[in-house]
Length: 213
Ligand SMILES: [Zn+2]
Image 1 (cartoon, rainbow, N blue to C red):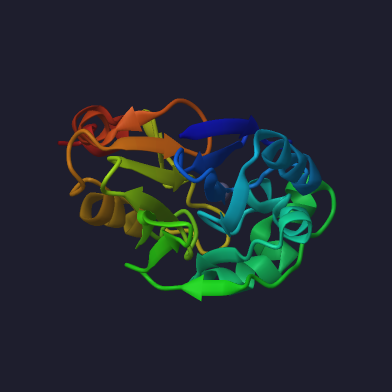
Image 2 (spheres, rainbow, N blue to C red):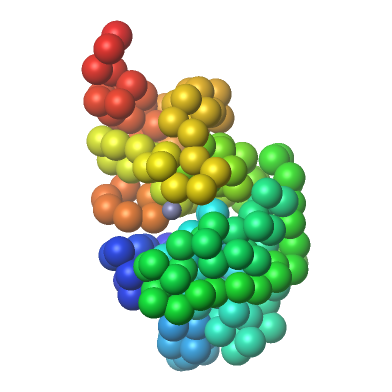
């Protein structure tokens, strides 16, 4: 079950990804007030086991510390994310949020890591590293449910910017081809901004990849 909250900044999308059986689950990219997100979870009877960050930009992790404080859930990101979590000039929070965000995540994981719900081990996502928008960019992929939370890696009809610290457009294009376009065609992609899409639609129609071919 997926529910969406609006972030405070840049219309960022925060996803509640909740196991219907146990009502335990994950929050992906808490871009709004963490206490508000925690209150919503409590009201719905959700237990947030982990806070998953697709990458270390301020609009995606604005509420991470507040949500951690209110729920006790650990913050998870890719191992390259440490500099973004620590340094406001890397996470753009001074520019985006008007105040610098600096914190330490609880788990810095590697490509291929499995994140499993303790209340139901069948409910899990795999971290897929796709650098290029940032060095720490990841998708969280559920093979069983055929969906992936892709942050700012790829959007319906476009891709993430690569002109921020750690960005590289050639890396982004080649890693999307290698890590995202090789997922099953009908995999639903849930970006951090804008509408959802699918692997096959982006591989065949995304102008970034089809303009010069
Ligand atoms: Zn971003």
